Amino acid sequence: MLDERFLLLADGDKRKFDKAKKKNVNHIEPLPHISDEVIRSIEETGRVTNAKLRFALGVFSQQHLELLKEGE
Image (cartoon, rainbow, N blue to C red):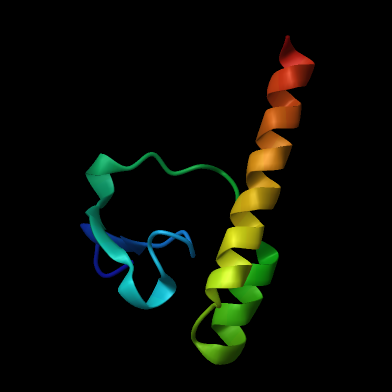
């Protein structure tokens, strides 16, 4: 979060951590998932690697697909 109105988004692939995109919080849909590994990395070093971001998003995507399949 930059302030109450803006935040920075990165995916570790097309949008790297060092070049995160500034987005208005009203233009995104927050999801109730937080990667413990990403939080730990930011707390310890003040940053996260792009590989960790890609991994965390991959895990989340896989879990989301499994939930969708169960709902069919």
